Image (cartoon, rainbow over all chains, first blue to last red):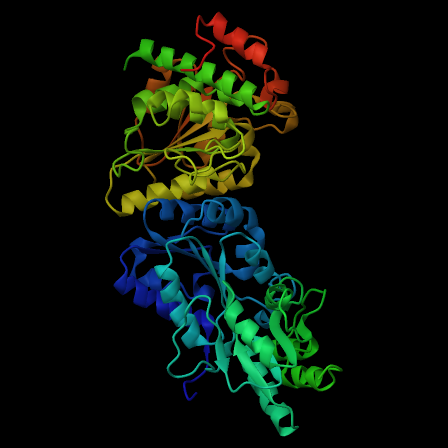
Length: 314
Length: 273
């Protein structure tokens, strides 16, 4: 846990450089945001394998498809809001419908984009990507996990992967011996009456909430559910069996995201504890500093702890 | 180039288009028929292909961006030997490899799943970039509709192709002047076409899309180290007198009787075989 904080987008840039060296078939596309998405390092080192498509996200996704059809391994990057919203039909019909192995590595997801405001804060991207048949959806909790995910995404040949990356540095939360596996969640801590299932930057906040609650006599287990699709339904079922309360936490709308995915998986389960779904309620974001926004939308460790403390079912 | 053979193939494509759409009871005859010569030219002369090996690495790639013209693509694939002609009669039926719009995962020979308009040129660009990056000589052909040019992504892609000087890419515009709601000039004007493409950095040539010698001239236009667009003037519904130039036949199926009658007037056999 001593590693210094790193934004998952920076880890993406790092992983691309590694892939550039290891995988001559890896190509990277961007839509005029390469300095922000951190594809610029790859672009500088492997200019012949980098394609700036300009401010044209629909064309970005379509071009990535063609590169995949030519037998290459494309990573298409822009902000999450544009990758999943602006280019939704291209992602659906040109990438996902024909199951092309394009990696959509989208940065600046969630409220923690900050001052750019609600127009640029993607709080619905997990929902939009998760419903597409065959699309994998991964949300790293820290730089190390993001780095591993990008290397893992390069190995996927069966279809597309959506990787949700953030702008802000996050402290390391995955264990020292951690290895990311699609469809596998990572349990942080012992089984406890309260299971907090989180993804992305909310894993760190959830760990903090668990520490706060421990001091107040409430034991929580935190699960890093970074592979939202495929979801680790086996682990989810076993956690549900052992706990009295499930809490899902995400920097995303409550509708359609991690919490929904867990609720769908648990709905038919025999032992189904109540679930509190923490996320952005039915509203858009706004300008503000990342920490101010997390506080304003009640997504800080203190807010998570308070929601659990006052849960009637606990 | 054998124009007699290409003419025969174009008429075969028309026969298969009419019968398959009639059998399906729905589909898009107008914009399929207008492409009969262009697809005959591409599949029987211009493109390097092996029907027995649909994924032959050295093949040229044809992307039908105007995916609703799937019947002419299936007809061309059948005529070229990718499948039996009878299979075209499964068009749009449950479990068929011949989906209402082309599905590359269902039918070998279909290079890209298309149907949502405006997306094929971007894909063709990516293919051209990817082939060039690997030092491969394969050519890429993207077939677009003129109504499709109202989609903004086409122009994003037009800029990309010119910027990256994709000399291994040729776009073909099926310039039939009609779309579902009527004349393209009335719905939303796409003219001046050649000037638009030129100003986007493309080499352009306008041809008669029903003349093989003119198509030959168009495809062999000398290039200035960049992409070429062949603007093919065509007649929607070409070859079926009551469909020619009638927007209503964009997405309406002929009856089985109409299809049979058409095939008989060609002197053909109504039984596909």
